[in-house]
Image (cartoon, rainbow, N blue to C red):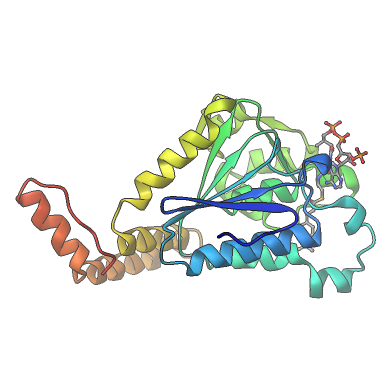
Length: 259
Ligand code: DAK
């Protein structure tokens, strides 16, 4: 039985944990309660050995960002000390299991930042991305300037954050923000297909690959290559790697056990 939440829905499909933001009347704006529930659900799936991959999605839209009504009452000190958006943004850096964002409708402001903190993005044709904080006299505060600049380069990140322009799915794909654009009715099917494929792989290899790719954004090439090499040696010693190579030689499908 899944836990009951107020503003999100959780579901599991085989080894995939799904978190669905569900405040459709407010376009899934991220108020404190919603972000706390997202954090709780993701942490729950992260600890659950039966879950290998997660999907974050939203009802009708992904999310129109931080709840502006709630945010307008926050003092800077409150934002610094209590902001759940900051907690969630830091938490995503430490999640070991792959997280896929399945996006329809708006993914803007904090919603875009939540998507960018995921490992892959599948978008429906109607998806819209953007960092419109500039129109509120603000700026992205949960990774928008940093992750976007690393992902699409300085010039494009400047344009997106300084104009606040919304970017349609097709353009987001061309910019490299999105892995795949699919018709709306196929969104969850495609996200689940990707999630299940990854869930079928050797779990320690999946964890190390995610860790190593993320490291590429935090280190210089020399340190990153050294980090990768060490993880590779570690993987060689796992039962799953021995099984994977043996199965190849014996021309059969490997059976991975996460050891
Ligand atoms: N917050 C609260 N309510 C929102 C909302 C939001 N972000 N976005 C939409 N809504 C509400 C609207 O007020 C409206 O409610 P009612 O008037 O019906 O009661 C309902 O959702 C439907 O919205 P619209 O009528 O505006 O719908 P449209 O289709 O006409 O327009 C839109 C869709 C997405 C273009 C528009 O709603 C819009 O521009 N929304 C605001 C988008 C935005 O500016 N997002 C950025 C928010 S700032 C932090 C780190 C990060 C952040 C904060 C703190 N720390 C580290 C401390 C992040 C900040 C942000 O995300």
